[in-house]
Image (cartoon, rainbow, N blue to C red; front, top):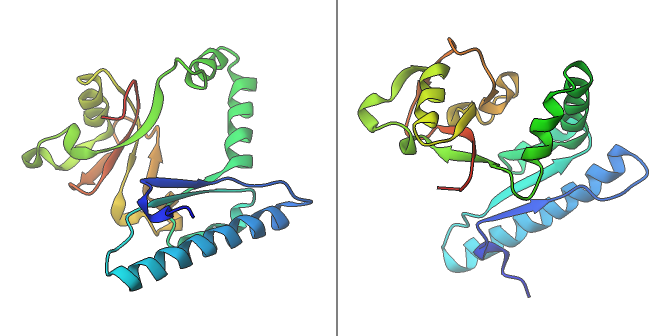
Length: 186
């Protein structure tokens, strides 16, 4: 049997179905089964499971259920694709960037610990421009910020800020992360 609790992360992708409700129902069933496996493992061994779960949803109405199940990372595939298509229709040149990003050779998107970019004494009030500059010094491109304290806050997009204005101020702590385009994970 698979020992799911040994993995660093598990992605649960949306399956096929007649409609978004059916698709998400299947995905959420799998999610709950995995959470039950994790709970039983923790109860039997006393060891907490640190595996991250990433869930793909077809319908944004289901995000509350996913958060209640303990998932912090999820992708709304229909919204993601729609936003890319809308941007490409308005700015055709951006398609070259997406081709590079989605190719096997291209940089990948990573969510990286803040301490890779700033020493502890520099944390606190920082602008997005500060984050961009810090990422550039590592030959990376900062595209956003993840504020861990807002990870359950739907009104603040669960703490994810993609391409805010350079002047946007964040009160960053060692728990927060930068979202970057980079060649490697570290």
